[in-house]
Image (cartoon, rainbow, N blue to C red; front, side, top):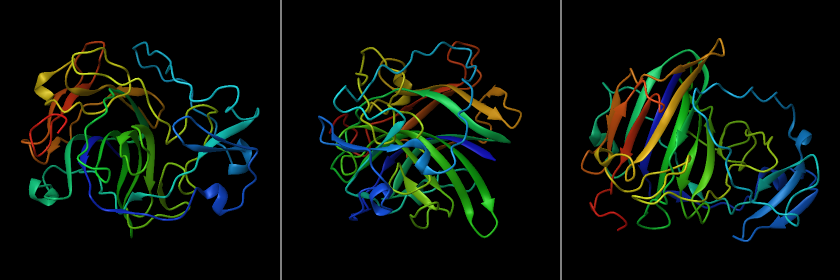
Length: 312
């Protein structure tokens, strides 16, 4: 299974549907419904009604101490009953298509992404169960609400017979048309990004596929606080608008990148499949794999986009 770490700045196409979430589409019982301060509507459902729940993996041995995410979107009024999990509603506004992550540097040319998606990315081929990393977080400027900017990791199974590519992806996205604020996201596809559907492909909890286990953190939740250029960094980030060469304090980063092998042991990511930068005038990447430092395998990435002006 090929594992990739990606960042993309892109997008103009989107579609709007009337779906709220699969909870309402399929008439699942809701234990409590609340509206958060940012206007997001949350349905609390019993964890077990989602179907079979896999046992969560043990905490990974990163070799680096990570501080627990100091974010709790709920209070005594908005928190659900014991044994329930949050499922956010949405207006169904999604990118019309999600572009497959670049996975073969020899076959990818920058011109393929003209007027589409722009990447700074790296990849490694490995037999694995998954991956982990720490991402920096900025509220990346987007030119209009239909554009989005994201920082993500992805596990991709390539060349699936009669399908092509299958992925599981997660990270941080600023896409105002989907959720007003920068937020945590997940995405998966079993059909090479051809269409959305239950058990087929989808963002967050728009369709069945993601099983919500945690009672506080969920795909679609707003992430804060954010990093600021030349300010203190948080552990979950996105592009600041600065080029990778500007380094810590300005550029976005992904650090402590690990691959969990099929033997359930972690190893440092090596980026051996190469890097892809679709337009170095827009975005760049500066890699430091197996650095031997407390950051392990890491890279800086980002840039201001076509205009060359940060925040505009």
